[in-house]
Amino acid sequence: MSSEEKPDVPVEGPPLRICFITTYPPRFDGIAVYSHELIKAITQRGYTVYIICNPDRNVGGHDDQENVFPVMNPEKAGWFRDVLKVITELKPDVVHIQHEYGLYDIDGKLSTDLLDLLIELNLQRIPTVITYHSVYRTLGDKERLFMNISLQLVDAGVVHEELQKIFLPVNLGWVPQNVAVIAHGAEVIEAGGVPDVLEAKRQYGLEGKDVVMCLGWWEPYKRFEDVVEIWPEVVAQVPNAVLVIAGDARPGSRSGVRYKPMLLKAVEESPARESIVVIQGSFIAIEYLTVENAADIIVLPYDQSTQSGVLAHAFSLGKPTIVTDVGGLMAEVHASSAGIVVSHGDPNQLKEYIVMLLSNKQMREQYARRARAYVEKRIGWDYVGGLHQSLYRSITKDKAHSIRT
Image 1 (cartoon, rainbow, N blue to C red):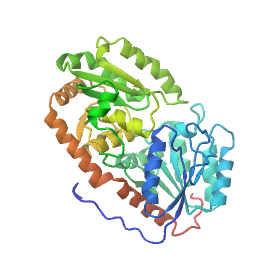
Image 2 (spheres, rainbow, N blue to C red):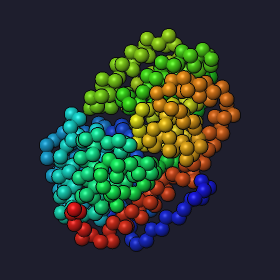
Image 3 (cartoon, one colour):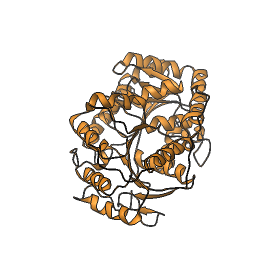
Image 4 (cartoon, rainbow, N blue to C red):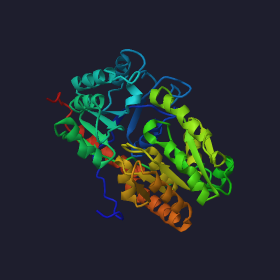
């Protein structure tokens, strides 16, 4: 199929009732934003969606949001019983769980409560889907155990990249037949309250600058310090350039808490400190998009990756990207032709391509056009919502499923 084609997504039958288990705005994390956008795409097609989410009122869902049930508290032992009670009362056609290890595990240890919930849903014959947001080419012991068990309890698992599906059998030792590949959705953003590039730059004091940006939760595997390290050489060749490090350590992330001071120390000690700007915070959706829209180039120098909401939103905003050759980052940039892939762990190559893009506005504009075209034709939320509908329909044909062996 060429990149110019957009396949039809046949959806038949009356709308279903879907129950999402997820974080949800106004909580500030990628899964919450992803769920909000996917739910919008699904409800626009006539489906009813209920949301079971975290109860922390300041950053999670709360009762005065329509169809929101804030009863999921993974820090509470046996939390799955509260969730199961709501599901039993709602009687949905499908339960859809958004999974990332940091959302459910406690102190980095695998929580059995989510597995207990999956067992109960299976015993009650409730069709269940999990979207796995953290599937790496090589799984650790904890990840391998969770994937082995959960895939045998759910009707369908969703991953965002074909490579994630390809490497699952290598990690698991068997070939799961219930895994679907559905891309991380996005939409071209041209208005909707998001300030344009000039206004976004003005808000952060970046007027007239060529902005290179590393954005997202600060975690060791993202290697933002690699860009800080080469920045003196970059700005020596492109004096008008500014490096922006935006984001913060994810609340509750032990690795992020350790990485944050190391990253900030690297910034403070850089010989090019005057051309580096740190925008620290957990951004609500409009703030996040405003920050990202201030960039001329997005750089994601990760040493491992599954998929990236930062990359999806970069496509939405028409931002050229430089990514490393890992996981979904490489796959999406190759598919979109909207950026450059470099070898991870090669600072010289990273530096050369940053300088090249900063120095070539015509190339940046070409990548921007390709990014927006990729969103419109291949990963738009309307299309992604249709794929989810087809998946839901396929697993509800026979509700009397049983535990797989």
